[in-house]
Image (tube, rainbow, N blue to C red; front, side, top):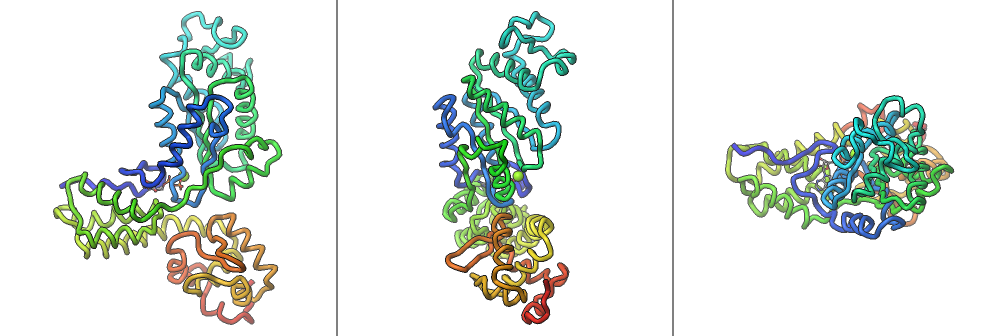
Length: 379
Ligand SMILES: Nc1ncnc2c1ncn2[C@@H]1O[C@H](COP(=O)(O)OP(=O)(O)O)[C@@H](O)[C@H]1O
Ligand SMILES: [Mg+2]
């Protein structure tokens, strides 16, 4: 029985990367253009599940194929030493071994050996600079990727400051960050991190359905099965072009009858509903858990509209003024849960969130019926 090729979990590289050619191309140009290229500092942002972590993996593997070395961390305490140690390990073949005389390498004869004592005597930046310089001299550029960036991480500021020095010293370096939109905008407002405002900001979006269809088809046939054309179209449409759903839908339509040669329309119908349930327990739950009660009330009030919602109507349902509701509108846009849709209108930015809210409003402590009557003043 062929193995299920889809990868419906955060951070897993998909079997086929859908619709990211332009973003990868921009990054590749940055590496080619040399130090000073604006594309050498990239920030990927976008909703949960849109493929930010996957993009970091992709750019790192592109860099590797171009002869670069990448050090990859998540924004948290300890990330600087992690990056440093990864460079030592990955650059091992190009770096002088600690047992040999290493004092002649690096800037001003700095030792780049890993003798533990060095860590105390030299700053992190000096140690990094010596390693990067040596690796650059041996032909390898250095890419640093940091995932899940947010402004609460002090070490990110130190990395940013050091990176600016590396660039000023003409070192062959590049940096790629990824984070949720609200986290990235907080970061860009940070005084210490002003240089990031000049970085190449890439908002990852949902991908075109034709590309989804081709990817589903290629993945299924590439792994020894087939799918009816109509079933394929229905599956692609159900993903709404949202990358996480491509994997979830693919995974669940496959697993209905994995021993059969053909994925049928029935498999697709059952697979889609399983995928949507799974989306709820991963993306929706996590997204809602990050919000305040009032934010959630706003969303439930919004969920009563079939498509777009008027801010004035949401405010009325919540029993609050339009001014008050507009503060929450701004917060929810920042959080990537909703998006502006023309004057005074908003839509959900997360697929199937409306349906999820309908099904779970009661368990979220937000009864939709009560919301119909503003006098209940849920706020
Ligand atoms: N371009 C893409 N094409 C197909 N699947 C993708 C793509 N980008 C991400 N995925 C899938 O979506 C899911 C979420 O990706 P991830 O990078 O973890 O999202 P994020 O970091 O933005 O939350 C994973 O299962 C991944 O395999
Ligand atoms: Mg991620």
